Length: 344
Ligand code: ATP
Ligand code: MG
Ligand code: FE
Image 1 (cartoon, rainbow, N blue to C red):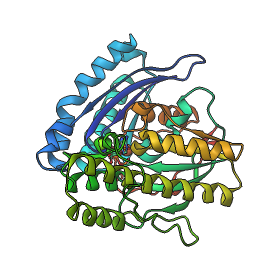
Image 2 (spheres, helix red, strand yellow):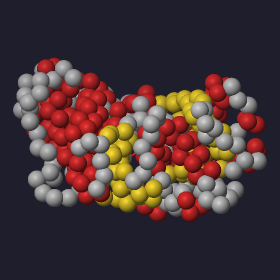
Image 3 (cartoon, protein in one colour):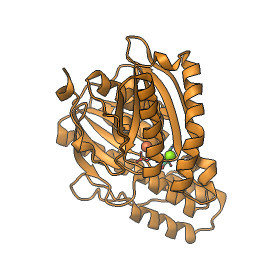
């Protein structure tokens, strides 16, 4: 089954074709990022995001189909992000996907953006089988999820304030790095001296699987204000911040594995591209005799491939939508139907 995936939940237009035939997989994927458009505002402007998706989506669909060597008529289904996300941005993807599916007379399926992130590592070689524990670390979410089966998710813990990616971005901003600063802060941390600045590992001194990252940002702000604000100092603070976030995530992941009785950890979402986080979690899982599974870095951040893949699994299980265009800007992953229940 060849499925077109469309992602427009925020500020990336993502399109991909995934083929479920053995040995096929991801045929093509393309992402257009709106970062430059929003940079001067220091954050995503929803109305500008929607309008840019309108401009970029169809050309990107054409480009992706051409790269895959396919005509529209070769598609067997269309998958689109229906939430969570910005309502206007979601509607562009949902409307386009529904119209394409209707004109091609193929089924369309609504995909939960975080399920897309969560399943992205399963597109890689030697994918893990549920049950496992997933760490979702993105710009809007930081969650630990027990994955009993595909489509069956139990929330173990989540952030009480900022998401990990949001903390990276805000911390980068307060040290004068341009939006979105997460990846730049991580690059700067490479040149920082470990231990020069030490920040707290929030909420690790008590039991529980929830996170809080907003206090860490304040600690960094104070350290930055009281420092000489030189280049090396900025790198040292970046390193101290990154180590604090990575350690905190690793401590909670290990607790979650203990709680779930598992040794397999799946990591997804933009912060999953962070090199130090990848190394730390791999080391922790290896020590337990288990493993940590990540998508390649380009599939950690928003993309159409994860939507095509998650949608293909659901379409193959017989799930699809009626012809109305509906989106769900706030959507709890625990309410998703399990995959098996929809099988014929
Ligand atoms: P959500 O998926 O929760 O709706 P989102 O789609 O905006 O949010 P993603 O695209 O998954 O989030 O990830 C973007 C986030 O990942 C940004 O906050 C960005 O700073 C962060 N990020 C990307 N690369 C890195 C990196 N190497 N180190 C740390 N953070 C990173
Ligand atoms: Mg984004
Ligand atoms: Fe995302």
